[in-house]
Length: 175
Image (cartoon, rainbow, N blue to C red; front, side, top):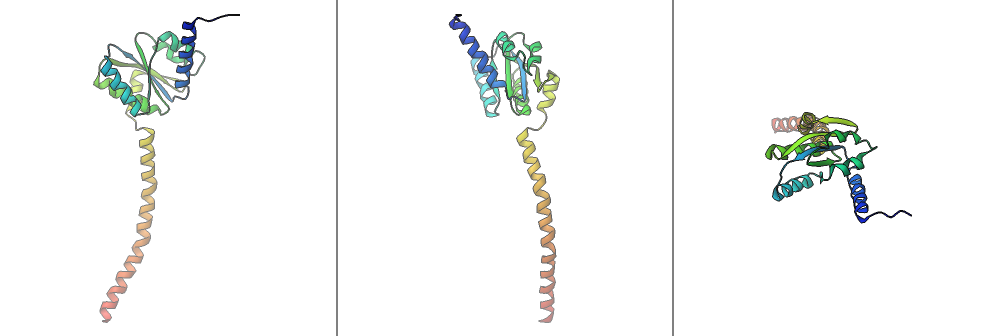
């Protein structure tokens, strides 16, 4: 019978928790966080949370263990130094949140990421961040779908309005 040390059990739990957190991610952004103080880290976490983006600072060895054999295994090449991971179901949200914070704070440096099984370099993450989010795209799509309906309703109402004006003018002529 093999017994595991409490430390090993805790590490296995952290790996499982991390694995659960990232499994449905559309994008995982890897960044180096070089000297963020407590307030900066809290501000980063608050921004990420507002945008439905998860944020983890975890030991590279544990992350490598968690992603081994998964579609995220390609991230391993970015896991060096003080690493932080931003992840979300909406690929644009994680990219936007990380890139926006990195623009304001040079202590967070985007190094790469993965979307599905596609490895992305830092420049690709930055380009992805410039795209509209899923919610923004949905809003635009709804606007586009509603616009033709509004135009059709206006066109259909116009002849009735014209007919009413003609009848009104005709009535004034007879009176």
